[in-house]
Length: 142
Image (cartoon, rainbow, N blue to C red; front, top):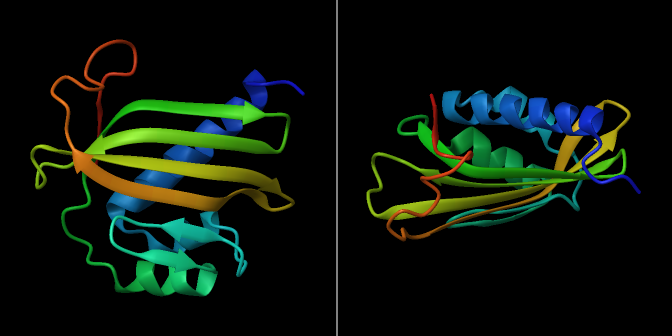
């Protein structure tokens, strides 16, 4: 198995960037397209546990579209072979000072492209200086 094959990694990075753009602009159709439409797809959120694409879809469609801009930090995308990847990132929002979000996603390649099959979002108290130095310093998204 090749870990971090450059071509595969570039594909997943593009899918992740598309997801992030859709998330902060509340492009629900794109968000739904990037999750595997299956009852076994899971998304644990900051305040909800969503089992299956129907629950994820209902959450996305009911979610408010305000205050979604965020800064990402320390994003790490690792690919395993040609068809599996994980993406991990920290995020901060202006409306939540002193808090840091953590997001993880498991991506699989399907015939119609890369899809998230499992995701986890949580928010904790921020540790001063966490993720603000080095090559993965925060990048503004919005």
